[in-house]
Image (cartoon, rainbow over all chains, first blue to last red; front, side, top):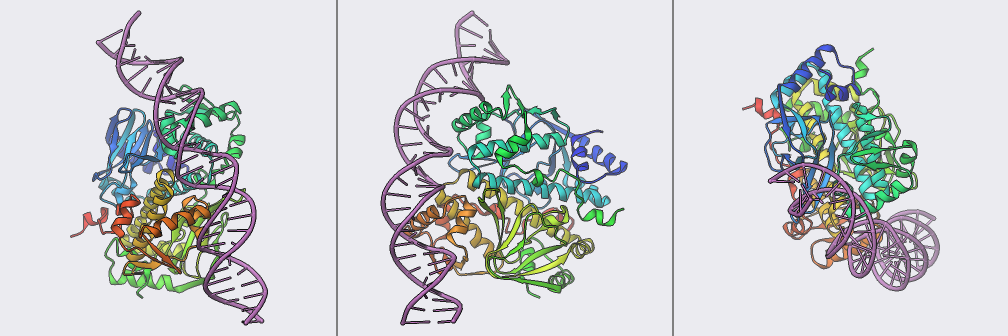
Length: 247
Length: 247
DNA sequence: GCCCCGGATTAACGTGCGTTAGTCACCGTG
DNA sequence: CACGGTGACTAACGCACGTTAATCCGGGGC
């Protein structure tokens, strides 16, 4: 009943017991498990369901004809894989598991009836889409303007805070089950250069990265170096239009 | 009554006479005009209204502390400037006019009552947000993987098709009121390099760019060179979940 | 008609990052 | 315990692109 999706949405709005119950039930009806590096959905597919990440890491990616690959988003527990399904028939990108993952499958109709009974859940779903957009905009800034070091530092800040929002951090550490190749595909850098820059980040004490564990000894300093400002993540309950109708 | 917003939404769903009427009325209630290069909203502001572009070009942009600037989206007639207002209090980026623009201002409440009376308009609004997300994802790919020439070619394809969708092209030509500096800020390139690459595009006959008019003699060829595939724009009426309940 | 100014263009030079290609460390497997 | 495989790491070299700075051009104001 305590699942990361609810934890995620509660960062935005307060949910009633009934809403949580309905959501938890919908998300436990059908569960799909995949191994690391398996594809969840590939570009061109016509998904019938919406997938939510319950456990593990996944990513969105696009591939160009000549093989170049760009990871366009990381998905951690609590994230929605494919809200697009609500408006588009066909996937315009692929979804891949990075680690072994557990997904909840909710049918389009199921999700729709959920949002039709609860305006608050509807708002929450819109909110997740807008946050996804805000994150994507920030990635645009990273790839367009930030140096390699800033890009990686920025990404680490983002991932750490997103994981913390769903209770998946331990002090100033979190898991980071990504290869240097993955980091390169996400930041638009070669794996070789990712390696070089990681050394610098390590040697300057900004991060500790060993095994699959990332530690950020001084988050404020890493944020400063990476020109990171957390507002775009909208992690605090700012209150959108819903609150206008509420006490 | 025939305004670009309706033209835009009709690319996704068929609207009833009443819905169009209500939308057109809401969009004509309050109109705001700005000169070229003026700011519409700046980061940190707390907008009370949602803005729609009726005429002219605008852009979203973010600025880093040291002055680096990234344009994260171009807005043309029919586009929604700030759907965020529905969920976030504070702007996490700025909006600027590129040319003189005419905007429709709709209050949060006004928009909400519009979407509450018509589920179809609600769906259409969700659709515009998802398209914005899809476009942002494609920009991520461009900045991460495409070469300078591909980036510019890709951008030209995108803008041309988006303008065509709202009836703002003339044969294989359209307006392009952007400076080479703007193009650089959008593609993550220096204005000098934008200039170099434009020469190549011109000399190879892929584009004609003179005055503020862009002509694409052979769109298919430009698409090929830029690794452009139009699916991410979702310009065709694919039918989302709404159609499931319809004849 | 002249001035002024933003934008386009060009040139010379520098560099951050990619590419290629190799070695090394680790881990699960038979 | 040898093995194969994957990911981390290193080194040498090259290029796409940035930086700086100068010149050119066209349009609007008076």
